[in-house]
Each structure stands twice: as C-alpha cells, then as structure tokens.
Amino acid sequence: MNKIREKIINTRSIRMLIQVAGFIAFTGLFTLIYGSLKSLYICTMKGNFDLTASIPQLIIITVIFLTTILFGRFFCGWICAFGTLMDFLHFISYKITRKKIIVNHRIDNTLKYLKYVVLAMSIIFIWTLGMNLFEGSNPWDVFGTYTSLGDTPSLTEYMKSNWVGAATLAVIMAGGLFIERFFCRYLCPLGALFTILSKFRIMKIRKEKNHCGKCNICSESCSMGIYINPIDIVHSGECINCLKCIHKCPGENLNTSVGKKQLSKRIITALAVFTLLLCAAAYYGATYIDSIQTSDSGKANISELTKQSTGTYQDGTYEGTGTGFKGTTTVSVTIKNGYITDIATVSTNDDKPYYNRAFSSMVQQIISTQNVGVDSVTGATFSSNGIRNAVADALGQEYQNNNDQIQRGHSGPGSHGEYGKKNGTN
Ligand code: SF4
Ligand code: SF4
Image (cartoon, rainbow, N blue to C red; front, side, top):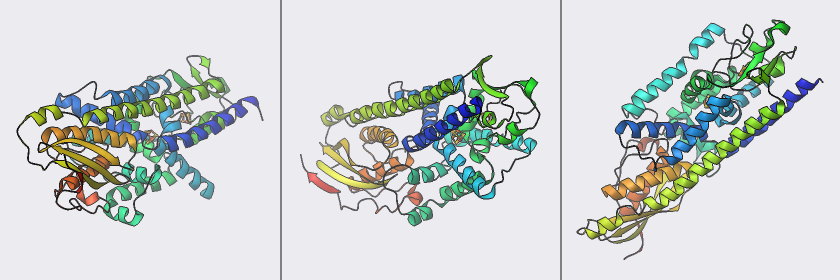
C-alpha cells in the first residue's frame, strides 16, 4: 500500500470516528443552528434584537459560519448528525446492493436548486409571515426524539400524533438509501446556506491535470455528485470535504490544498478536530450562558409586580406537569401578592440547549404578561409546549394551543386539580 493512500485511509477512519462523536455529542446541533438563525432573523426584523439575550445564538452562528467560510463544510462532512445518518443509510444500501446510483449531472444540478427553494420558503412563510408550517412536526424533531440521549416516548403513540414529521423523515431516509447524501444535496436549507458560504473557502480539492487519466472515478465517488473530471480545482460550494475523491483516484491525482500548498493528513485531521472542538465549545458555551440567563429570567419584574395592587392568583407555590420534547417537564410556580413571581424547573428530560432557550424566553414572557398564552420559542417548540402546559397545569388552567395535535400522551392541563399540586403557601 503506497504512502498517500495510507494517509487518506487513516483520514477516513478519523472522519468516521469524528462523525460518531458528533452524532452522539451534538445530535441536534443542526436544528440548533437553524433555530438560532431563525430567532436572530425574527428579532432583527421585529426591531427587538437584544445583544445580551442573543449571545448564545450568536456564538453558535459565528463559529459555524466562520469555519465554513475558511475551511469549507467540515460541519456537513464530519460533524452534522443528519449528514452522518445519510452516510450510514447509503453505506448500508451499498453493502447490500453493491450498486451506487449516479444521478445524471444535469438532473442532479437542477434538483440541487430545490434546497434554495426550501430555504426561501422557510424565510418567507415561517420566519417572516410567522406561519406554523412544520412547526413542532418536522422530521428533525422525530429524528432528534429517537436519537438523542434521554427518555423516548412510545413509538406508536408518537407516530400517530406526529405522522407528518414521521412520514417526511421516512421519505428522506428512503431517498438516502438510493442517492448518497439525498437530503444534503436537494433539501437541506442549511446546506443551501453553507453552499453559498463555502464558495469563499481557502481550502480546496485540487487535481494535477497533467496526470489525469480521465477515468471519471473521482466524479463517480463524490458524495455530493460534483462533476470533478473536467476541472482542476473544486470551487463548488457543494463539496463537504469528505475526501472520497482523493481516496478513490487510482492515479493519486487529487489533493487538498490552500493555494498551491498541499495539506498533509496531519493538517487536515487537525482542522477537522479543531472544527469539532470549536463546535463543542460553542455548543456547551452557549448552553452555559443560556442556563445563567435562564436562572436570572425567572426573577424578572418581581419587585415591580409585588409593589402593585393585588393580582388575581392565589398566593402559594404550585407544581404542574406538561409533556415536553423528551417526556414530562415539571415546574413550580410561585405566586406572591396575587402575581406569578417565579417559575422554576423541578425536572425535565429535554435536551438542555433547547430547554434552556425555551425556558428563559417563556418564563420572561409569562411573568411580564401574567399569562400562559405566550409564543413558543423558535426551534424549541416541544420544550416550549411542555413548559407552557406545566405552568398552566400548576395554575389549574385549561390551555389549548395550535400544537395540541402533536402533543404526545399529555394527560392534559389542570390534571392536578384547581391549582396544581400545592407545595406550600406564603
Ligand atoms: S447539508 Fe444539512 S443535513 Fe446535510 S450535513 Fe449539511 S447541515 Fe447536515
Ligand atoms: S468527493 Fe471530493 S469533491 Fe466530492 S464532496 Fe467529497 S471532497 Fe468534495
């Protein structure tokens, strides 16, 4: 086995390891990126952008965007859990059939525009016009529910109540069995953004034209269906840095380089690990900042409220439950002087980044409006529903919302009686 091939095989093994690590550690990172973009966009459009409150989202977006602009789509090729799922499905189908479907380049290139349509429709209809399309019933929620760590709801119940998301995920998975990176090529709205951003990357796949035997193996092996054969440098933003073209070329005619400088296996691996560590730092850093903001938000407006005349609620501390993303969420609600003055989490199985984001925003809104009928938090709909229903349950209120049809086995608000389960009075 010659030296270059040996290098790439090692890089491929490291990529697989990083993909597994990314799948376990950041299963929902791609939805977090999408949700962060959405909430930054909505705040900016509504003119209520708050720099301090947006720090967690800004950290996530800055890290992912910067690494993509500089080094290309390491996130897609090496870290994204949904991308890893696509690779896994294609690997299984190839092992069974020993056949790889190569989509005609013209058709493939045309279909790749679909993801820009998905992105544009998301921005116009969901982000700008506030329509509830797929909100809480999208395929990522189904995927996230059954792949991230924690309790999972009963599969049959879940499929019944969230059949739109389940059916969409099934179609995407079926597509992934037949066409490599089906979702990434044609449908992912983030993929559309990353394709544009990575056009400016400094690290590119290069071909030494003078050695090229025109066998077309590089193009046939490309995960993203890029037609590499007639070009010297892969400028396409579709490239996800999977390095399959380099590995498969029998003439060892491809390499990864910055300008004319060829990068060694060690540097490529270091870049991928660097991106993984940056993602980890962003993910956990954002989660930590979110949790600090969350613990502060419950205390919002308390002093002002308690100075006013008596509110409508009965003083005391009450516990209530609601069904969140990964099972039951329990909160305690404190009423002073007739006002909701504090909401605290007693227990939840939801993934922390989503839950914290939902909690911090929902609690602020509920305390300032003294009403549970507040907006769900973008990208954390199930957690928002769980919190809202738990608070309503604690207050003994019946609460209906647009996502009732996708709630999973929720016993219903007010199930603890008139005022939830009372822990004590003040
Ligand atoms: S294109 Fe989308 S789903 Fe595919 S790897 Fe990139 S972010 Fe993940
Ligand atoms: S096969 Fe090569 S050109 Fe295609 S996505 Fe992978 S690294 Fe990029």
